[in-house]
Length: 213
Length: 213
Image (cartoon, rainbow over all chains, first blue to last red; front, top):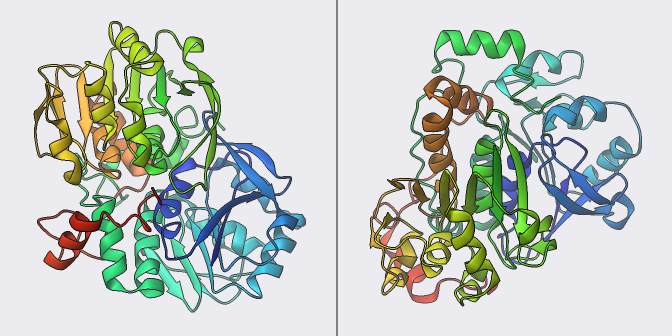
């Protein structure tokens, strides 16, 4: 089985790295990072540069994963990436995304008529893309599996791992990753976070903090 | 402020990527990946190659982070990495690790007499390294902050972010990362996971699955 993780300039590293750690450990799975040009691709705050193959080197992955990030907006034009996504989606077993990666899949036309989720702050960007937005952490609609913002990719991937390889295998992965989360605050959703923080985030999308976009 | 994340062959990517996503977004922080030789370094299951600087290019980071992974065992000999860790530790504000990264810090002598945590399966490897092992998800002893296995790095980093930049800032990060975890199983610790899975993991440390070591 081949897992292809799509990178592009200013992706958010954890969007990719969370599911990579889970899905890359599925039985007999080869994991490849892929980008429009191939070669090195750098994340949103310019700290992590990851090597990738070019799209035409990865013609038929079984699972495709599209992460989100501040660079997502530049990936909405029809072009080589969208064409590749449409083409590989014809034969994937699972087509997946994390965070605003769902907008790229939707922009490519791959999520037409599907239920999907994205980062809590990005829901209105589904408008006009033919998607039924669902405010859940993990949304499955047939072979399309989308996770909410950034860290939700871990939950998305464990959910998918259970379906692909069975509950026992997925639990073994969870134990190996020691994924028994204990966040020091309860501020991970706009419902739970202090009102002032949600307002500031929504009004300013703290650029200095978030991707230095 | 400079954050240096140490990589070495067969590191576990999420050990590094979790805290990277949090600590790299602290105010006015530059994040660099660093390795003994510099250049490309590849993770445990040979899927992710990340570019790094050489140790001598990063002489005085404010925060140092050492991730774990199947390659940790090859980093226990005294040598350039240990010398660098001892040297930079003299001036760091925070010296941190995730998972078996704590064993590398301990092997370098940096955790002498300190309380520290590591991956649940690695605790006996603290023997003889002068550390007081503590089975908690995040352990702070002065400026030494250690996280348990793999995904615990996110909790470690958010805890540290709150101390460095204040609770409000850390909560903003948590909201941005949409870190409101919903694991599909309750199997993330040996106490919670099914007995048979813990036994298999402990007996076989599923090599085929875990890092193909």
